[in-house]
Length: 267
Length: 278
Image 1 (cartoon, each protein chain N blue to C red):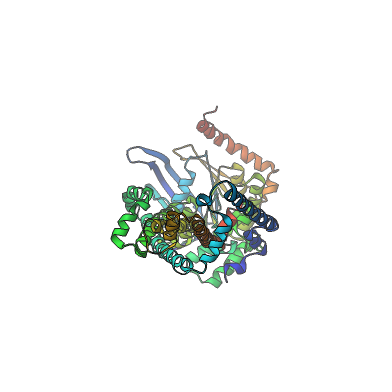
Image 2 (tube, chains in turn brown, blue):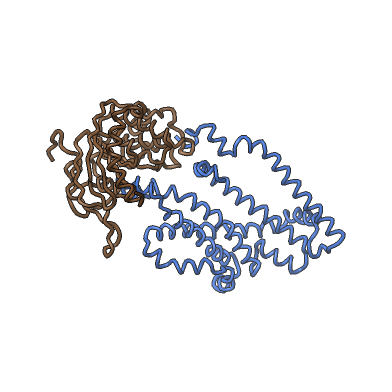
């Protein structure tokens, strides 16, 4: 495969996806078309249960593609491929019998990297999320925010070129979430990666992304794409009082709100 | 580097039972001993004045009998017999139980096929098999070992199976997203999570093994504490009976307690994780 600069990392064309039985299929995704360029940060927002995660799982290779075409780095997505994709989800999924360092080393252990290298890399990853002093802590000794930082370090330790984030801070309280967005922005400034982020938090999407993709209610299709022209480096806390941020927020919310209201049955 | 080396001192204290609990433990022991003394004193008074020791024994006689039995074949022959029956039955039963538990958790079709049979055999009162096992294996050790295996096997097998199939959606997703092989999935994710559940089965299994061997001996046997219990009760040597009972209680408590301590040491992370709930 020839590697071309600025080649799109993700190319989805006419992706459809059904769940449920063959006799009673429940359509989840309808004709999804989406491109994510190298180094781009794209957020998918949409009403809850609309199929955002399903799409992310397709990109991750965790769900089998049914119809349409979906390419990741020019190939069909596979969960065990060597093209360095990191997946992070709302719950930390830290193994309680492993220390922080051992949890972060886990992806490297699975990739059969020797102990000295993986520990050095895990330490480095933990330092990058500000947890250099918690190497030997266990999950039960960490706050929710710290656990999610460990999970972020575990996602970064393999140095993935593509990060798939599924509601990465969805289980956190509002303050911790903003602190984590701040941290993620900082990490992404140093460490350039392509990011596909799924979130129900529109503020989070605007804070982090270059582009916000709006999914409709189920069966989901792309209803609109918004460019977020906020300069980088961004600061999550400063953005909270940025008028431009709020302008973008209002624009997208008008479209998102009608989808949410339709799902929830309120007018 | 062992886990103990990287464990922080604070964590180790929490596992040991906590600073506060440490201070309280002498009080706990005081209450325990006082309660025992009161029970034995009341028992002694009742046996001397109101109810014949023929029915309830008499603590002073019981302790004297226990002391004498330490120098008789009860300790040199019967206790070892019971321990061997229990131990051999326990080891074979739990090894087989774990193996079958792993197998059925890995092959859901087999699991579904055998589930009704397992449930039926597990709820069946195994002690009813004693006459059959005596017919097959004789009156000696083998029949009690067989009985112990039949009880230990199911509790260990069912716990192993339960531990292996408790799928945590998040860890499953993590293991798949990291591209773990099937063997890695088992060794990194499934097995460590299953071990605390298997440990519960192993601890229960030990209690069941003792139940089976002593129960079997009471029904029929050559040697063993159960044989002595049956003999003492039938000959109205009630205090001797209680002495053997006491010996049995001390031995089983010591062994089960030792196993529980071992579990706490090996699975300390589980106790820390569950710290808020226990």
